[in-house]
Length: 173
Length: 101
Image (cartoon, rainbow over all chains, first blue to last red; front, side, top):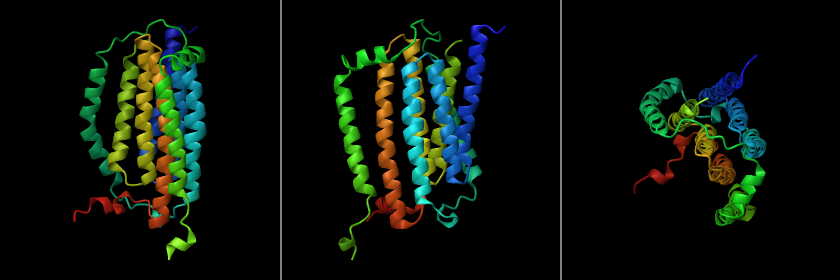
């Protein structure tokens, strides 16, 4: 019979495999749709990771917003743009570039990890974070950022419509 | 289970996003790498919320999800517009702002 800790480590390993594998597929594949599928895998595994961290609300929000809206929107855009083979950028020595930039980025990764491990390494027993906790904090201490975010979403929607619309016919000539 | 493997995962994910931004030319891949970097920050906020025992970090993560959604909408609109104007997805072709007159 598996105890709690071993089970946690097994789930963490599987989710890590999916996240890192998906993101490696994302940055290394030539076809854009395969990149989008790797991104989808990575985002779903991130939702599972939030659930592993005992954070129910963020897990559901991640699945609904990131997977249900952002990834689907990017896939729709990729299929709408429908770039032909000759319109994709020509990347002959892509893996060489990825390897070189991996070597350059590696010390930064090590520095980031070392500076993060100065934080306390044991989880506190604070229980699950559900929508009740989040909601009471959001509408008591975080009201102003919440309103600013709503204005930001509205302006982003208007800006996206204005940028992406076709040109009017009279203006073109 | 201690929190150190989670921190290692955050560092690796952020670095993969950084590698994608610096080494690829396809605009969609650059966009998805930026999303990956933002998501790794989101994961770090969720970890900190459990390590420090404070639910405020989860609220920041929720607001960050909304910012990610706004960024996605604008970035995809810009990519559609650029593709319609120039018929290419190569980020090296868009050099108009870098010309010194």
